Image (cartoon, rainbow, N blue to C red; front, side):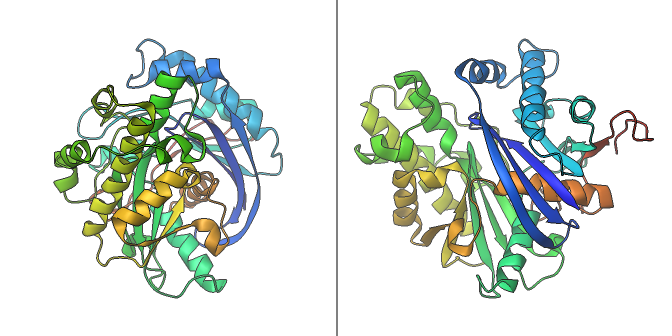
Length: 371
């Protein structure tokens, strides 16, 4: 079926939407995509709610904004039969309070008149998993698609997503079922610290192209201390909240703008390099998706610190800006079919988990519900 996946990541820059033609296993084709940026006042609403849980100040406003932004963008895709709605992550604490994505799927279903699959992470956390990352099973489907298309050799490959947080997937496309073929985990902070720094220091959303970071010199002593954090010694699967390393910003507070940006970028790259040690084998190439691949300083730091060939996923015919949106369209179809969306190798759940709630709008002959 034709599914619309929608993603608003922890970079807090906007909403991605992408169509994908799939049965929740293979990929029949990729459709068109679109992006809706958050205006400055909208980004302010989301930033004000970060780290907060349902019922706390600002959360209701963030949820209303999330649904409204997604509904406006979904209206551009009337052909989609189902919507995969990730919502806006405000807090993630799988060992404690759980995970919180703002935005009610049943409200989006009502506003769009289409079934919505949402709340993808809660069930995994409830069963003892980390609830993240959730794109790895889709990365496996992408690898199988790329092998069939002659874009990849039939051998294990690594995908690196650089959003607010970085996450790494090692997958073997020769294995049919994703739950048997994936190892994945969050690597550490990626775009979030440098974006927050640019917002605070210069009043802009990001360091476009990594130009400021490229002009600076990273503080290697600070990066070495950063890598002493116990997260990096913990065996995967493991996941992070967007602000798990909030101490990075005050740590670069006395540095020049360029040196601070360079330090934050190199810290993200060093975290990825540390994560490679947990993979079954060291990949010859890192296929990079997400907004971080547009940061030339970050891509150069990755190559220097990992020793791997660092390539954007466009090298194998994919759209690196839309992979996470496509993933939630693909996952929505899997939920409709009752197929696993996560498992022991990706989130640490004790077994395969089909996460996600299904909400159907009034008038389709089914009760609004979830599973």
